[in-house]
Image (tube, rainbow, N blue to C red):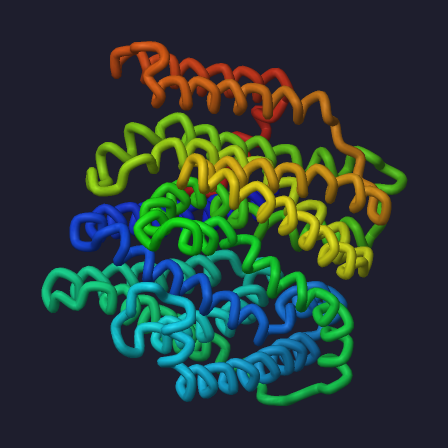
Length: 483
């Protein structure tokens, strides 16, 4: 338990530091860049992410699943990592070369406003290097080396923060300051990881291991391609139907709500490896509550983070973001609903990958994408970025709901739904009040508004006590990790 709590705190610290740096960075950029300028950079990251996702062929998922087969052998683990990295690196080199040759035509195709020269190439290089880094970071996560993982993960945003602000404020490079900051930070990260792995790093290609990983990952390739598109479909449609300025404004609101997903992902670095182990051990078959009892604290803490970000979004955004970016508060509130429910999306994905039903995750992704497109186009045309937020949230929750029932068919997990519904009820209560408070339907002073929000937080803690989330023994163990 000490190690679980310790690792959870380390990953949470990473998210906290990263989130704070991004908050300050966005605050500064919002005063230097117009929504249209920011939208161009966001779209460059979106399309680079799609291309890099294709080049990976879903290998990261196959690598992570098969890692647990070889985790007891240091040599086999190193061979598995090397095989995955060499395969993906070769694909990414081909991708970068192709972009170098066709960059002008591709830039004209995907951008309405001409971006700075070579911006797309620089962003793609950053995304490619970041993709390779994920294999080494996954190794650190799966082996429980949380401290090393966090040190490296914090390094990248710190470099990005320093370089971007320096180039923006001192050299007046505008959009290119973000592109250079992104690439430089990821290059330094991969160099740092190579140094850390220098003793255990081997260079080899095991084609049997590659074949086994591809059996898992190849069925996921369409899912990865369309999944990345689906994840950014709101921004893509906003650009097509609306403008890059809408993309830039929407990105600000999405960045705040995305901290919920990042926080949940940080917790996932602790619980997902253990969840795989529990599924492989099959102990949950004889003890139905085993997985539920293990996952419930992670669920409760994840939703607490979502609740805090959501109900205090008005105060945070008004304090930090330029007035040029309007309507980002409701976007943050609405998308917070989606990211809170996405906790169970992570669970169903793990269940299907464990059951080797990756083709089903692809089918679910296509279903979600169809719903997403069907809602986003009319919603954006009627309500702009707020419509995009509602369309993404509704389609996402529907897909998660359907995915849960499908995953249960192949890898059943018993959940205490009464407790889960109680936690979600308080969260939804907070969402309703946050939207009412923003809309001005009820006139409240800032003091009264904050008091009501603190009351909702207090109610959430009381619910935690009632469902025995907080046990005195857990607090004692928590205190023991500190000197």
